[in-house]
Amino acid sequence: MLRIVVLISGNGSNLQAIIDNIHDDEMDAEVVAVISNKSNAYGLQRAEQAGIKAITLEDTYGSREQYDIELQKKIDTHQPDLVVLAGFMRILSDDFVNHYHGKLINIHPSLLPKYQGLNTHQRVLDAGDTHHGASVHFVIPELDAGPLILQAEVPIHKGDTAEELAQRVHKEEHIIYPLVIKWFAEGRVKMLGDKVYKDGKELLPQAAKLHLI
Ligand code: NHR
Ligand code: GAR
Image 1 (tube, rainbow, N blue to C red):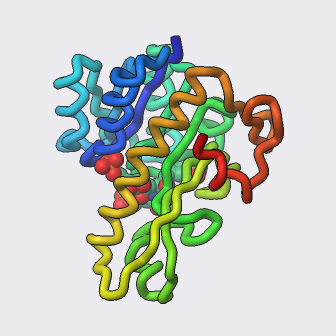
Image 2 (cartoon, rainbow, N blue to C red; image 1 turned 180 degrees about the vertical axis):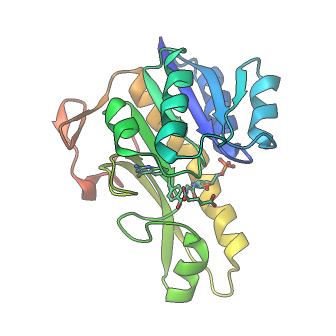
């Protein structure tokens, strides 16, 4: 059984997609706790609704390092095999990230390595791109730079607003994040050093988009 702790800051629609797919696909996985850095995050209610322990850890510690130590303690109480960032909006310190080497993943709303950082949908529109998407990647200390596991691409339509584009990307996120969780539950994905292996073979960045099956 894959024990998962999910970290959120807001709506938690990716959390919901993960909870629903674990159930519907009968995955050998369980979300054992959800932790938010914001007490008003709607995702906390989603967790409670699903009978999952919902925890708030607000930043009252002064330093990023101290917050991350407390966060690590809270997470490790639940002995997770996988820690999932799902709209978690705090940068994590190097020690925290290294503690979960190979067990910490994130979903980022762009076709990484393009558009690291925040406000991706508007930046993609401003650049006049024709395609956009989402990326699931292992987290390494360097922000949004960890090795890719799976990407989904969406077209950009003429006249799209950032909200319309974000919605289109979200739909794909809700497909690819649960799928990656399933791969973990089946022991099919690993990170060794800085490389990702899928089904025992090195997964190159350009192949992450093709590995939908
Ligand atoms: N931490 C590390 N070390 N490496 C990554 O790749 C991380 C990470 C923490 C979070 C998610 C990420 C994203 O997908 C993520 C990846 C927050 C910020 C940010 O600037 C940037 C990237 C991500 C999440 N946060 C501000 C901060 O000072 C706060 C912004 C806010 O509160 O609105 O922490 O994009
Ligand atoms: C998602 O689109 C995710 O890709 C993005 O936040 C959204 C969270 O939605 N993540 C980041 O921007 C990380 N910096 P959700 O709370 O409904 O899952």
